[in-house]
View 1: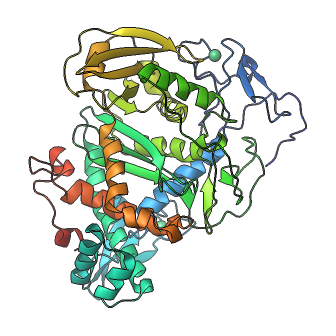
View 2 (view 1 turned 180 degrees about the vertical axis):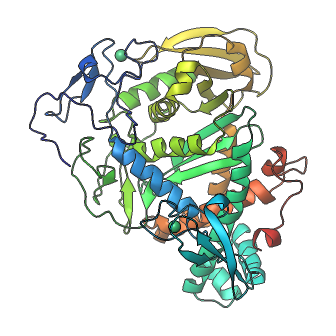
View 3 (view 1 turned 90 degrees about the vertical axis):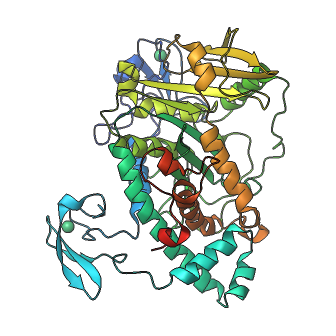
Length: 496
Ligand SMILES: [Zn+2]
Ligand SMILES: [Zn+2]
């Protein structure tokens, strides 16, 4: 499917997919907000330097994206989470890839194969065994391996101590990661059944901060317990079948970035004085991107990974929020999302939860605070400042010589004091920082800089350990704090 790119004006938005159309004005206060009639916009596709879509009402120019590719990316994220779990493997079956763990109603138990449980698919009658249904005879070895890994030993040291070769090490690591995904699937599904409101914290950071390899990592946690609900990276281990040179939302598979490195000479992060100046500088940086929703289209260096394929981050981030929407109980009356100041996070969250934005049943907020801000204290004086090209309405306050600003992205001007007191995305931020600290030897190892694939199993293992095993000062794991389990899991239980 390609539409002629020689047209100077277009009369259609990029085609909808599964009834989803993400291309429209994203200015909440504009009458065209969320409206998908192409007549409301100026559409042009002839000049790559100019925006494709301009709102005739407010003049905003939200980047367009391929709805097809967002859905395809969401499917990739789901498949990765379910990979290794027992599920119908018949490509032509409607239940293909739906794990027995969470879709028991799709399958019959169908005897045993040796010690392992066999299932039959109700739709296509295909049978398969659950690879995890017998006991793990490698759990002692795997426990030792994890203990070494979590205490900062290098892969080489672990291989020497356990007398294994690197290939065996990575096979074991992948096996452990699959076990961790299986455990997480059980607890994520329990979280997904809860119907009380949540505060969510989202953050977004390079997976390997010193490598400039273009791999970005998004994580969303339940803000109060710290339970990490989902995390995704804009990288896949297989190369894409084909690449397009420039992002073109009217073409299928435009989400893949062609293997190509480029160097930008001024990669200095801006250091600005004060919170207001910092927020202002961030808005300028975002406006300077070729595509405001793609942080990799700014003035950045990319050393393309040696294997696999980078994905334009906007597709992974929209996919991430779609994944969350599918996981969370739709009957939750209302919930909040706290995030750093980043247009991509704002656009993806607003677009995916557009119905909730229109019904005022979601509170998406930018939260920016400096180190001295003392969390949880009531705030006294509040200053309102309109900022950025969009004239976003920020509320600022100050305590303990620290400053904090919040901006309600759904346009709600009430409860500023409440949000200034409670809103924070620290749960996601600290989780990511701890991963970088805990595994710094692997994250920063020079030979691994262009090989992000070897970190992917570690992400699953870390999320399982963080949610299910790691106890806070009060002795509770995040899963306990959310009421998903009654006692912490030991490493041994995690690996069973
Ligand atoms: Zn508009
Ligand atoms: Zn089937």
